[in-house]
Amino acid sequence: KAGVTQTPRYLIKTRGQQVTLSCSPISGHRSVSWYQQTPGQGLQFLFEYFSETQRNKGNFPGRFSGRQFSNSRSEMNVSTLELGDSALYLCASSLAGAYGTQYFGPGTRLLVL
Amino acid sequence: AQSVTQLDSQVPVFEEAPVELRCNYSSSVSVYLFWYVQYPNQGLQLLLKYLSGSTLVKGINGFEAEFNKSQTSFHLRKPSVHISDTAEYFCAVSDQETSGSRLTFGEGTQLTVNP
Image (tube, rainbow over all chains, first blue to last red):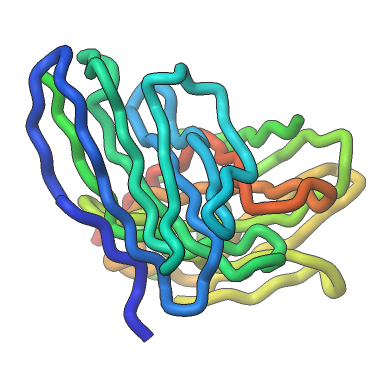
């Protein structure tokens, strides 16, 4: 079975721009979660989508948003980029009701200049 | 809310020596517990998990962890490490009572295995 895939793998943007990241979950997984990883803050939960609905949300500003499509693929969008948004963005998928067990993709590394 | 504390940010060890990476957690509800490993420029790989039952959990690559409810700990151990075990290790918890998947991570422990 193919793992979680994320595109693009690397991205460079400038302050004020917006960016969209994509995540394709493992086949059959209906839950997709997003995490931000930075050296200063570590791994932080952004949000989770299940059956096209946001089910959980972390403590991030409204500039961070996401959506999920009927095939469970998910996108996250960051508007009005700030330097502090530079991070590794990880997507994880899981089966519904899988006791939190999540399988992670390789991540998208975003650099904001 | 939950929190996770990994007691050592860096653990250097020689090849073939045993290692223990320590993890304590705090939660007002029951949790599931996980250890993930991250190799450079990669995502997170699940090493092992505790959901219920036996408190000693065996995972991949020879790792095991023991859940201690009274001490709210979930320490990771390996009896003999290899150079290839050099990576960052993350302890994480998930709330048993909230629907959905949301992991709270510790700060990570960098394990460096020296020849």
